[in-house]
Length: 250
Image (tube, rainbow, N blue to C red; front, side):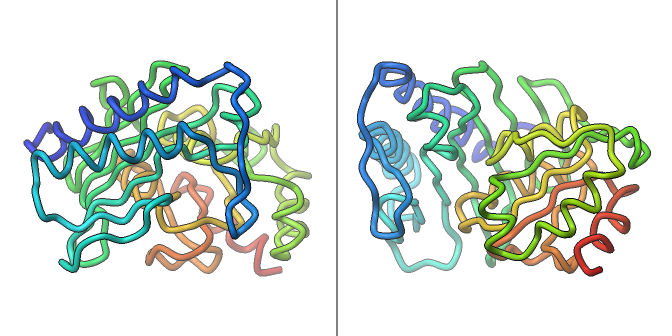
């Protein structure tokens, strides 16, 4: 399961994630970026650490990072989200992640998600399965009525016209929980929830989670069932995919 590149990715992402803990629940401030999203000193620190590790072990390779953008010209690339869930991080909530993936021809072939405040590391490589702290993990099927569904913020569901579909699903399932960002997708990969509804994302938000969910036996698509990474994402078990997609097309 552990290729040289994946082993490196686990180590680099874990190192970057560990640095965020130095600032976690310390009352640090945050700023707003041009897109109105928050950023902290820990975001910048974690991305720089991971970039430095990539430069040391894979010099000259292309990197796309949330805070520093795209560096390099080669088509294959590393994708970094130093803190996925900065709002949670800034609020002192432990449900944030450091994400790192490697893409070939625009498709992630390995992904790592570190939840440092929870001491959880998810990792996957194409065709080799998904692992949580080194133990293979799988999605868990359940009927819609017995399912737990995760989602992002209510304002995003409203803004991107997904609230009606979410309400249709919510009226039938066992519970809807606001476990947003990468954490929600990892709940699906770990079999702790059956779906995660993400109405708006950036590429770095879902590159790593998408391959982890798929290698755990789940589905990761847009709201129409397309598997190309877009600015939205649904993680779910194969058994629920049709019902969830239908709810958002109604």
